[in-house]
Amino acid sequence: MSLLPLLLLGLYGACLLFILCFSVGQWQLTRLALRAYAGPSSAEPPAPASWPRVTVQLPLYNEQNVVERVIDAAAALNYPADRLHIQVLDDSTDATVALAAARVAHYAAQGLHISHVRRPSREGFKAGALSYGLDQTQGEFIAIFDADFVPEPDFLLRTIPYFYPDERVGVVQTRWGHLNAQESLLTRLQAFGLDAHFLIEQVGRTAGGHFINFNGTGGVWRRSCIADAGGWHTDTLTEDLDLSYRAQLRGWRFVYRPGIMAPAELPAVMDALKSQQFRWTKGAAETARKHLGTVLRSAQSLSTKLHATFHLLNSSVYVVIMLMALLSVPLVFVRAHNLEFKLVFQLSSVFLLGFTPLIYYYYTAWKLAQPQGRRSSYPGFFLLFLAVSMGLALHNSRAVLLGWLGQRTAFIRTPKMGSRRAGARRYRTGGLNWLVALEGLLAGYFLFGLAAGLYFGDAGLLPFHTLLTVGFAAVCYYSIRHAR
Image (cartoon, rainbow, N blue to C red; front, side, top):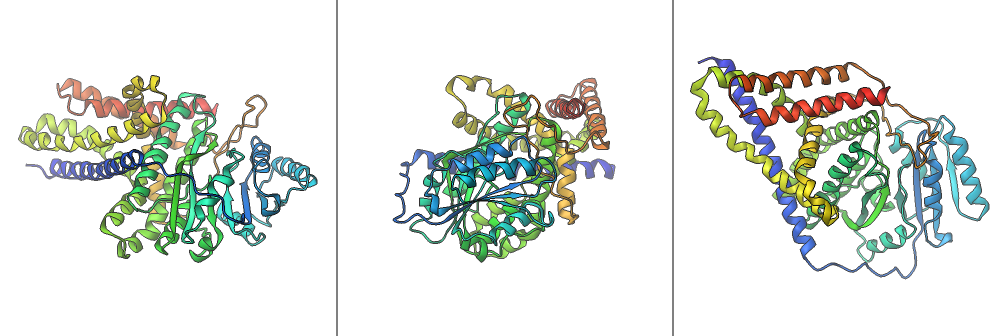
């Protein structure tokens, strides 16, 4: 018996086991979320006796398509004027600077307390800008909105009361809405994935008393919580997740309100989506590298430690999927020429049931997010979502590995197009590169695996190879099309 087939089987089995454990965790979060939705709905707390000072921070970097929109939305917030300060934290190097300055001057002339903050350098990227702005304001609470967000006028009036009377509430996070979910297939797939996070994961973790995360925008911090947790750090690309864990390890409580929505724009082109995915997946790996050991050594309950582990290792799933995918094609030949492994393959197929809880997890989110009449298309849409997610595995695996290795990279913001597509500046985060070519080659590689399975009359890996072929081909196609 050759050692190589055994090694391939062992690695593939370990990957399946990891997916099973991750999937079971998502199933548990789904159960917790459904229990929370089925329980009595809590009324919004009453307004505080005296409204506190609030600073609204708008971190910007070269966003001329949306800069005026986000400043207008912040200026329209319904809150006592003498208690509100808006900071436009502008690190831009293009026409965004002039647009922001003009808009700030417009509202300042109307009596609004609004500042156009320009730093000497872009050191620390977004985290550095937030920290710099914090030193120049007296707000007791800090609301943060990225450039593509359009908060509703009552956002502060609905979120600030949740900080009272519990002084250990450090964050109130709200659910992201989608301004352009129906713009294209790409935006619909993103909305589908994000809805699962905001309608199931965040709700489930909150209901179970586990760690959640501030999502970087669309939420409010208590200033003293930021200070107590050590302030904004610049050593990860997900400064939000990093500070969230430091604060919760210090005993601060986070409140998540899915009923309050902060609408935002989804990336409409593949290079923008890839830049966002790179930042999220690499930053999550960096944060896991930084905090996972501390979490496991903490006094938290075992269940909270387990959920926190899979939360921090969420992006590492892409590495597991990529490894499984690469191993799957040789396994077609191992199955065909090593009949003595037949029982092993039959047993390993049991672990494929690990995908069943994920189907349930996403279906539950789909039901909660979609109008009643659209649910019938779920199976096909879910398979397409799964395929494209797999197609991003190479790009995201590279990001995760760089994060785990501690290799520093720049913070590449996700450019948006704004509501006026005609004449909008097309910001690019990169052109065609070797990664896109490799994605195309991998689509051919998995197509070869699919054909080999058909040739040998073995349909065991056929669904997997079909999804991989479609996913990598789609990601490669959109990368080329949107780069033109």
